[in-house]
Image (tube, rainbow, N blue to C red; front, top):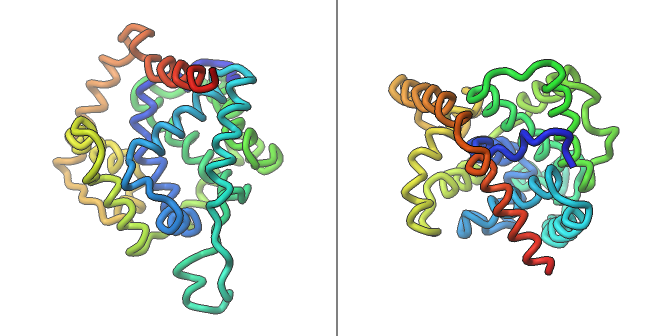
Length: 264
């Protein structure tokens, strides 16, 4: 369990689209999703699974964590592709993928951590050094509870910054991964409320992304979009922190209740 409850803040979900596109821009993950996942046809399933896992790691009991870890491992077991000839064009277009690869799971956990910090800083302001160190140590559990060795997680925030910069330089998109992102941001299925909320979701996703990755995914971004995003962040920074805790932590409570019910 995390040493603080920052992960329970519902506003952090606003960084979910950013985290997913950062993951898709890793060629192995992006093509693994494109060829082994149908989450674009079931847009809420990945969100539910990710939030259940994050809340179980951050706020759940040891039994709940074991239950959700088993579910994630079962879901990941069939998600793999055989490597192709290293010198072939097919190898570049379809990188080998295994959902249990520690380095890939590290990147997934890293995107969740960096996105959470990015949103937190825009809404609540920068963390103190002690708070930031604590949040960093806590988020290491997102990877280590699966297949990421503790030694693989960068030792401190400075080491993470170096790792993050290096990984960003390796990200790229192509027609396949851009198509997955387009389907994610413009869902044709799912409940009406989800599709109605996507204009805001697209604004948040593009606004939180590093500019170079926004361009790589060919996401439109104008000065008007920047003004709308900044205005939304200003309103959120005033309104959200004063909401009752029960509202701010409702998703965490909801997902843990659903997990306990399914375990029973």
